[in-house]
Image 1: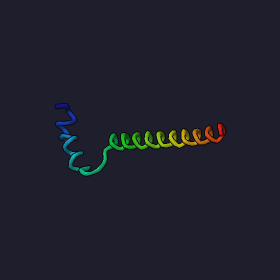
Image 2: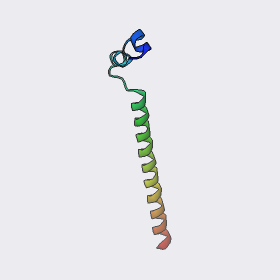
Image 3: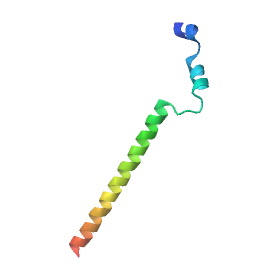
Image 4: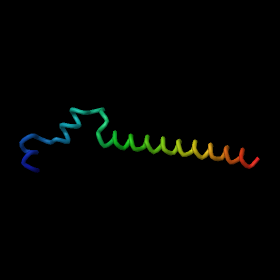
Length: 60
């Protein structure tokens, strides 16, 4: 146990009590990364579909 833990108490326990039910900063960052990844996949899929349609029109 460090000096600050002895002086201030257990910060993990205090955070669990004070911020119970709230999203942590690391959880928020992970959620934002997942959302960004999904958006990028959807954008790529739309671009691929548009390219396919253009290619079909070109070859007909």
